[in-house]
Length: 113
Image 1 (tube, rainbow, N blue to C red):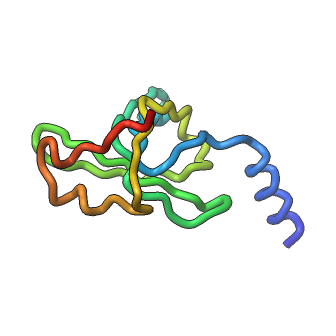
Image 2 (image 1 turned 30 degrees about the vertical axis):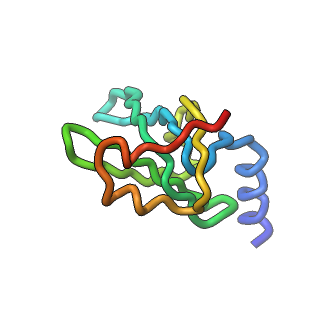
């Protein structure tokens, strides 16, 4: 049990990226294809953050060719190269699931100044 606790504390020492709900983020993910490794970028809006501690995850949503695509990323995963914040959003909810049913300008989040 102490070994597990030490591993979790070691993982938590590295500073995770500071992201909040409503932020437009660019997630750089390491993808392994056979012996090769490449970085794939997924850009979208953070609509949810769940759990906490070492198992914290965040959901990123974007519309690609008219179809909504959502991906869930673990915050402390080693395969996430980096997360950059493109712009901050001004929201009043913890979960932005209502954006799934909206299209066009109604699906936008205001910019935080």
